[in-house]
Length: 147
Image (cartoon, rainbow, N blue to C red; front, side, top):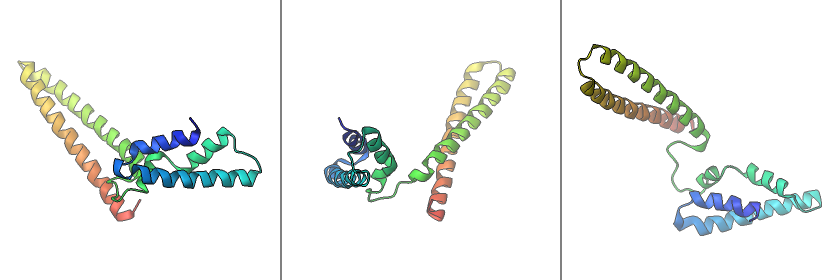
């Protein structure tokens, strides 16, 4: 399988079925033109490594697909990395605080069952609330600043 076919296969994974054939045909044409232009520029066929570099420069498959979607994603590719990083930090913070609360409550409780049950419900709520707050914040950033 060529580098181009592997790249298109990774793009196809992210495409909706109804648009897959049309978008892949268009992308194949665009990418073949880029490869041929690179070959004309160099005066020789591109090596596999050069083709891979050219395809990598075209963008991550999920980002390429986002250019063809009719609706905008909630968090764009440009902010997605930061979104996941902030979300992970928030989740770790929630888990640390909840673990500390569990230790304090368990130290004063006569029975651990109800304490653990309450801690699980409280932690679930806090994680959902953290997810909602981080997502809403990034949606505002996305819409307001067009990141």
